Length: 625
Image (cartoon, rainbow, N blue to C red; front, side, top):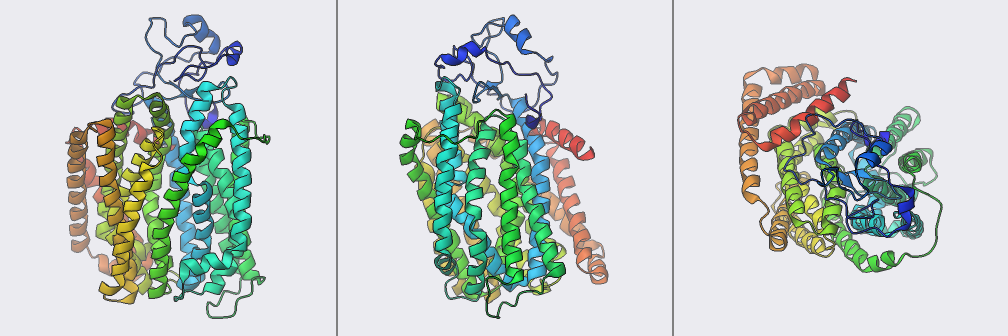
């Protein structure tokens, strides 16, 4: 196994090269006969006693080439892979990958925090709103053309190519990379040409400087090409069980962006949001080109990992029949993203019409939510997605249901305590992290209230994205589109009502966060009903028991933290040392919330405790190193 996979477990069996000319059976990647399905245990607990290391020679001598062990039982843990590779799909491998990615995602979220703090404090809310609007456009277009939705839909295609093609899917990957790179390049050219239209569409005639946002957009929209290429390369690496480089790539992006903002703070003369805009002025060029360079670096760091994984990056023109067939499925993905972007555009327009700081505040609130989701939700989803693809393509519904149940329970177990903390201490968190420089106390208070009102969104958001991957693994591409339509309709209707009920214009953003969260609740309920109709029982009783214990423990933890915060002289601390005092205050509250929550949950005997404990031990070990 490659170093990128982060495994210290047994080496995986390599196939006999002579087998590569044979057609592979369904469910097999490197064997002439059917391989065993991945394990379907209810937890991802690593094996208590690791198996001894095995070489290719020792395996071939000990077991027949049919994919069975010497005792005739199915081999555990052999999953998909391309080009003659095997991927360990065992529970232990998934959890090893999860622990490794958690460290990278933690670093990514921390550097993302620093980046956002610098954007707000160096640029100020008004310029930050224009900059963030422009910087969101490349992500919007990439998602529409070739984003995470379509790359998630690629996973079953990669599984089929690895199982069916004589070369293990090597040629298919070359064609896929070539076609998607050309598509991303065309989208980039078109988007740059339409930059003024895109910013006008997002901002309307509101309080944010549209000309400034347009100037930034011309420099930031070239990111589309590199985001698109990155998405496909990441999907290929993940399918082959190589997670670490993709998890660390955003960290490099953030590092470059932080360096750009630091340089701007040192040598820049600042940007007046009310002054005429000059695209070629030094400050605008520095921010735009430096930020785009970060995305270039993010894509470039995957190239060495792909080469080590044996992926041929040379262009190969021509459409594979499966890519042609995928066109109809891709329409579902494009429709999904288009509908979701309608919700984002409406949020931007309503926020920009209310207050010049609203967009910067809303996007910062969303970044705060992405910290715990990135560490817990994204990590789990990335690790489990290849196994879902294998099980879904092979029609192993029982295994899919087990993965749904476990993914949902682990998401609740990890996210609910953080939601309770954010809801109780939103203003404290926002003031401690962001009340610096040009970001004043009033803006920090509104941001904190937005965090408190919208923190609950984490749970339905994580559940919907897990459900989406399940549908894609079963090659059902239109059901997630129906779900996002329901989410967006609820979100837009409620968002349109917000300005009429908000007590202040600056509080409109709080209502927008609440509307967004309620939309995702509707989506999660709809997804559960639809999956139950297709798969039968989803083990909902286990999920409800886990949710009840975790929610009760989290609320208890937050209440204890609030009581301690009230009794101790925390106001005197913050009055004496300012924003740093709020950091300390939030830190004490966070530790108390998680400690009390953990103590209560330790009495629950939930199976998630057995799953999460080895990961936490591994994570602490990596952090100590």
